[in-house]
Amino acid sequence: MTAREIVEKHEQIGPLRSKVEDANAKVGLIETEIAFNEAVAGTLEEVQRLCQQIEAARASLASGDISTAIEQLEAIQGALRDDTFFANTNVMSILTIESTRLRQDIEDAVRLRWDKQLYVDCHKGEFRIEKAQGPDSLESTISSLERLGTFTVVNEKFQQELTKAIIDPILQPRRDGMSHAISVTESGIHIDSEPSKATVAETLDRITRVLDVLRQGLPSKVTATFSQSLVAAVASKTISGWLSGAIPTDLGGLNQFEETLDLVLQLTKSIESWSWSGHEELVSWVNQAARLWLARRRIDSLDRVRKVLAASTGNTKQVERVEKETVTQADGALLDNTTTEDWDAEWDDEKEEATTHTNAVHPGEDGDDEDVSAWGLDEDDDDAKPHTAPTADGDDEDDGDAWGWGEDDDGKDDDGKDEKTEQSQSASSSKPGKEPSPVQPSSEKEVVLREVYTVTDIPDSVLDIVQQQILDSRDISQPP
Image (cartoon, rainbow, N blue to C red; front, side):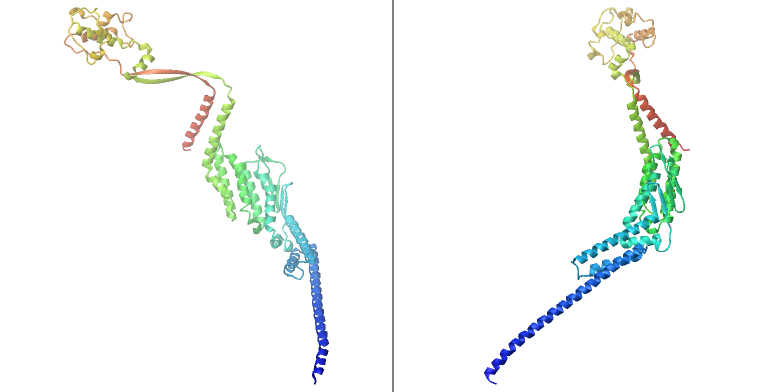
């Protein structure tokens, strides 16, 4: 084969190769279109299937088969979550919206059944438990709520409504001390519309009956959370609404108060026997009853004092304070100032000392002569010890008569002593050769101090309150 022939054949192959490549491209495009069409068909079929499931779930919900409707809803949500063919398409948005609506319809149906089975009417004050078996039972409803993930929210709302409808009318008393009575049946509880007078014992009995009905009628899954919410609320409201006001302020109510403590302990033991908790606040209140009683007494006493101060009219009166004190010689100024009736009691002693000094300095002279020592001007030198000196026979007369003291006395001085007896003692003390024994004033004396005050009626009222506290303390300290 010549070179020209080879070139001609090569030129003939080029167009054929182009045709082959074009045919291959067309085949690839057709295959891609086929795959796309198949994917679209599969997606449409999946969408159709999901739509059918949604419709089937709605049909099951309409027939009351909530459990089947929930199963179909779970399958739809799983398919929408796992399917990636139309993750960002409008079809996905539409299906998501439809599944959300379906879920809301199922939740509404389950809650409607829950409200029917556990009926609570806050306006009428009524609670009723509807007991059923099979798919319509309360346990089935609880299971459906758990699958939907809304049981906790629904149960909390139920406890709030129960507290408002039943617990509060019992434990929240009116200002006049009245509360609502209850009627307990096998199917529920009914609160009387009109309040009536109630005691603490009756209130505790009512709340015990309510809790017992709930324990017997409700499933354990419902009552499992009562310990953290309902029982704790009951304990707190019982203390604030009834027990705090039952603390007596006088000793006459202690017996009834002890009975109340026993009833509270019985309630706590019942709650504990049901394997519930939340009653710890009641137990703590009972343990602190003595301290709370003292605090209540203190508050009541202070309140009475405030009322006395507010009600005082301001009327005044005079009161006298009398006090007796014993003063000694060191308190001579006080003695001289306070005992005016004995102002010259010590003058006789001074007269005797003056006579002794005169006889010692001027022996034998007449007793009428003056001596400055008799006036005590030389006390710094001579009062350390008594002076004695012999005197003349004519100078035996009494020193007091020489000075003219005691002339107006009727024979007795202010202390009730006989004047002649004192004169005899003075004369004998001035005899020569004998040691004088002057009469010393008493080293102690009892004086009476009086003070006058102007007071209102408040002190008497406050003293009455204090006296009552003292009497109560004495009575409570004595054994019965």
